[in-house]
Amino acid sequence: MRFTATVLLLLPAASQAVHHFKELNSIQDLELLGLINKDRGMAQKHLLLGFSNAECVDKVRNVGFPYDYAALGEHVETGEVMLERDDELARAYNITECNQYVYVPRGGDVRTDFDVLSAHDKLQLHNWLFTHLAIEIEIVNDLPFDVSIKWEDTGRREGPHDLIAIPRGKSASVHTFESHHLRFVSHQPGAGSETFLRVRVDGSETTLRLSDYLSNDASRQCANPLDCSAGATGALPKNVNNEHGSSDDIQTAVEDMEIWRNRDSENRARVIRNENQPQTKPRYTPLGFKRARIPDDIYKMMLHRYNTGERISEPWPKSDCHTNFFEAPSTMVYLTDAEKNQIFAAMKPVLSEWAGGVNLFPTSVYGVRIYHNGSWLREHVDTGDTHIISAIMNIAQDVEEDWLLTFIDHNGDRHFITLEPGDALYYESASCLHGRPVAFKGSFFANAFVHFKVV
Image (cartoon, rainbow, N blue to C red; front, top):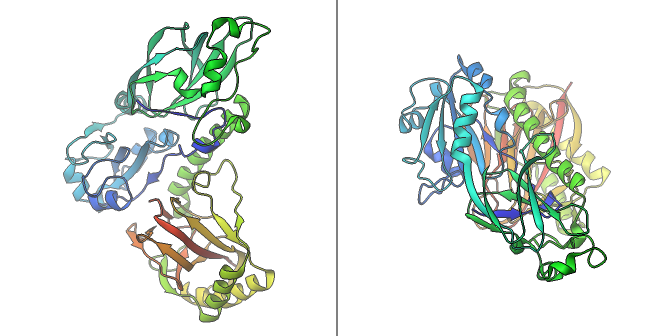
C-alpha cells in the first residue's frame, strides 16, 4: 500500500479534495469524466455512487451523502444518479429504489466489481463504505529510536489520536483507511518528542519502511544510537525527502495541518454550494449556455495582448481546492483598464440579448489565463452575486486532445463542449455546474472570462 510522504508541508499534496459529480447518466459519462479507463473499463479511483429521485432526495441527504464524504481524499470520488433520468446505470447495478449506493474499488471493473447497499442511516452508510476502504499495513521502524504513531482523521478539527508505539528495530501492523494521515513522532534519547514525518495513506503497498522517507543524510546522522544522544545531534534532522520539496519547504505541523483542514473545509463548502445554489438563481435562457464567436475586434485585441504581454504566475489561495494550481500552476496575462472596458462594452449587448434583454452590470473580466499540461478544474458554480451572465473566450491553444468543458444545463442534462480559438461560450455561470475535471493534455490553453450581474 503506497504512502505519499507530505513532509510537514501539505500544500504540494493538497489535491485530496473529493470531486462530487451530479447528473451522471451513463457509463460513457463515467468514461468522459475520467472516472473509469475508457479502454479497460477499470475505475480510476474508488467510486461511491448514490441513487435517488426528486421525491426521495432528502433521504439521501439525511444519510450524509454527499456532504459527509467531501474530505475523503484524492483517491475517492462521489457521484449522483437521478433514477427518473437514467436507465443504464440503474440497470447495470440492478438499482430498483431510492437511497441505494454503489461502491466500485479503484482498479475494479466498473461493470462487475461492485457492491450495493440500501442505506437506512448515516452509521450504516459510513460503516459500509469504510469497510471497503479499510486497509492493514505493516510499519517497519528501522530507525535507531522509538517512534509513536498518531492517526489524523480526514476533515476533522480535533487533534490526532494516539494509535501505536513501535520500538526501534521493531515492526507492527496498523489498521487504517485510505486517505487518512499517519503522523510519526520521534522519541530520541536525551531529546524531546518531535513530529518528523507525516504520510498520507493511499493504499497501493502493504509495507511502510520509515527510512525510505528520510534522505540518506538523515538516516546516516542517527545510524548509531549513540549519535542520537543529548549534545550530539539534538532533535531529529528535518530533511525528509519528497518529490515536491526539500528541507527549506518545511513548516510547523500546526501550519501544515491548518492548510489541510482549510482545504477540506473549503471542499465541503463547495459541494454544498454546488448542490444548493443552482436552485436559488433565476434562469434567463432555456438551457443556460450557447456557443458563439468572440467579436472580431475583441478577439484580435486579446490575441495581441496574449502574444505580447508579460506572463505572470497566477496567485491562488492555499485553501483553494477546485483547481490543481499546486501541481500545474496557471499563468496570467493581465489586461489594462482600457482593454477591460473595451471587452465590457462589446460583450454587454450580445450577452444581454442572449439572456432575454436583461440589464447587465459589468463585475469582472479576467486577463488571459493560461492553463498548462496537467491542469484540471473541478465542476463548480461561480459566485452567486456577481457572476450571473458570463462568457468564456478561448484565445489560443496547443492541445494533444480536446480539453472538454463539462456543463450541466437547466434541464439537468450533461454536455461535453469543445472550444476552438476565437470561440466563446455564453453561460449562466452561477446556476449551471461547469468544469474541466479531466487533466489537460497539451502545452497551453488560454482563456479569458467576463462576468456581469443582472440589475
